[in-house]
Picture 1 (cartoon, rainbow, N blue to C red):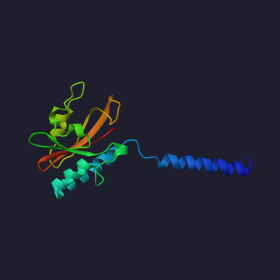
Picture 2: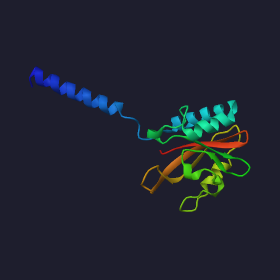
Picture 3: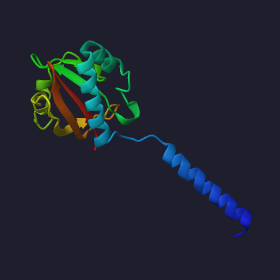
Picture 4: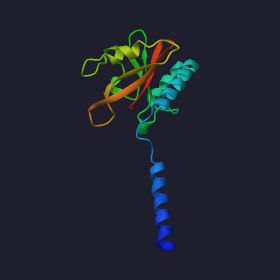
Amino acid sequence: MSIRNLAFATAACLLTLHSVQAQPAQNGDRAAAKAMLEKAVAAVKADKTQALEMFNRGEGGFYVKDRDLFPFCFNIGDGKIVATQTKQALGKDIRTFKTKAGKAFGQEIYDAKEGQISEVDYLFARPGADPTPVPKVSFTTRVADLGCAVGYYP
């Protein structure tokens, strides 16, 4: 191989490597989801009203669309979802959410303890057109009179 061809081959490999590295992650991961929940808890403690507004608008780093990461929160008393990027879930009682197989994952999310982060695993469709349920894990906790969670697809 000539030096010129070697140089072109090397450049092509570097460009390919760079483009692969530059692509955003397809999913959020465990660490990113847990970190976002911790950030959400801090925001609720600082100013609950403002935090819920940011969660619903997806502002302040509380929605990473290319990774399907966002916090969702519900009232402890009635279980009603008050913040989420899944707008059709707003106002619904988290305790009623079940998988097609009947697993009451919404009740498990609701049952989180204050000051502890729990994990709830279940099957749930990814955002988008495909309704096929896939494995999902939500980190969940209570803060003040809210339960808050962030889920990811492992």
